[in-house]
Length: 186
Length: 127
Image: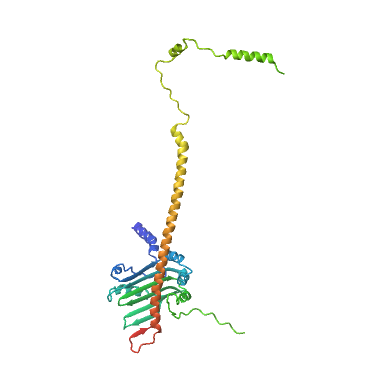
């Protein structure tokens, strides 16, 4: 009996790190079955190792890639699922709700939430703040014929995200950065 | 000091002793009779046996060849790995750019929703 307990604990200790997730990383389904049904799909899974490789091969001469290179230095993962369909609601809403539940956990804050009942679109932007720094970002967007889940893991420098403005057509989200105190007058 | 007389005498004696002499007439017959009737071939072997020779030269040669093959194989594997890593890196960078484009598109929608003037009807909710 004791041997079984020890064996189980050992197995858990060994297997534990394999299932461990970085702070800010969401459990996003692969949606493998949807790829055939979708008219267009983007499935990007870049863990820290692949992200490091990707960053190394970005061309610093290209402004778009140079901005991306600057951004990805502090990141440990980028996960994107984007599917477009020819008919309405051809995707399982349950899976998206499952991701949405994960960002309702403590630490995550919704910084933007847009709902359009007319077009039936929802876009939510969440940020995981830990120790006063953004450690993860997530976008959950759904429309009748498409849905997108973005999860960016790692210390996101909001100023660098700000630097991407105009390069990826990223809008000015009016992100407030720490302002230097004004020098005191003598 | 030279002693010409004794020297000349010695040379004459040597010449006489080494003069060509015809063999006696029955020499061949006597020689043939002296030879054994069933002559067996004599095996002459060198000091180094073939196995020992192989051990002496073959093993170092094989080791050198293996080392050469290992070095060449290692180099080939390293080059191949580098090529695979480069290909994976390029593919990953393309995926990264694709991911950032999708992210920017969605942020753009969020931005437009936040920036657009509030609707007259309670049709849109923004937070």
